[in-house]
Length: 384
Image 1: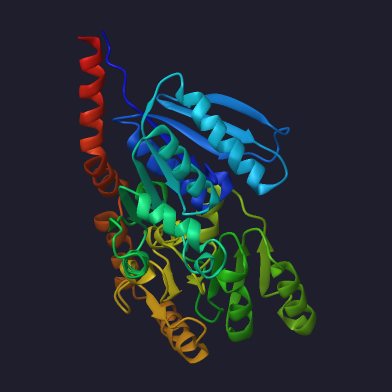
Image 2 (image 1 turned 45 degrees about the horizontal axis):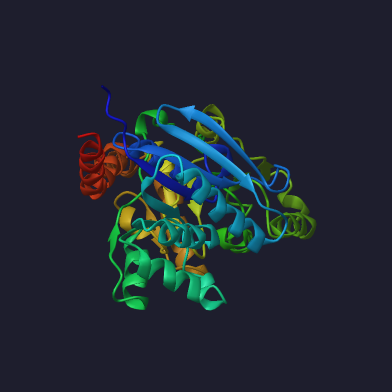
């Protein structure tokens, strides 16, 4: 008889590449855990009619459970908990996991208490940077202190959690990618031409588009933007081009595409990848750019210093600091113009050696190995 795997309920804000970086990471980590568990992934889907649930088998050992509990967030969260409890009546989960320390994660924590199951949380973005100052502090505190383990996306995130919640059980697990998906892509630079800067991602205020437009010179660089312009960033870009009509031919924007070929084409179209974020977790685009052999200029926030050694495999600058940014960008420009390839090679080697998906997978499987063994032993005892 084939022994059924124990179940993990996995509550996420987004799932899959087309939903952005958080969805990419959630899908990747769920894929790792499927080796030892059957995953029930819960995600709020606003396109569903109110108070409805859709269940889909999207892969071996992976069920996507989309739900929508109404227009009000409290109703949505209550419906999420009710859905988790209802589905657990079939096969009891071994544990509940919450992703991103957001309200959905807090509700998952409450569901785990009602089911009397252990709870694990994944702090995979800049979860604490803003919400900790608002009325969500109590929810974050309850979530963190109820977690059997917390998996922080960066050293900075782990240190924040440990400082704010000394009794928490937190460890750092850095993001990863499959470097074979992003081969080295030579940039378009030719002597006598301007190097091309690239900014890629969900272009929200925290991504620093306003800072970049203020402090780069269209006379010295071209700029390729790829991503959805959110939180007023469309007005920022429009205003910049209105004030600087001569920049019209130097600044180009394209919509984000979750197609891997489109991402590779983007990396081939730029010489320098810039990540001027004010707040950050550990962006997948950083690892993808390094794997592609791009010269990366990134702000010293979140997990970026965990990946980049300044001057060795990329360049770091102090966030919101124009002098620091211009110095790092000038170093990157000089490197591109020189044609030297030691730094791009080191960038690629960093991802292959330290941020390959196999390393991240092993870390999670080790962390959950005890739960997997205990759950399988318990299921076997019920059959005796």
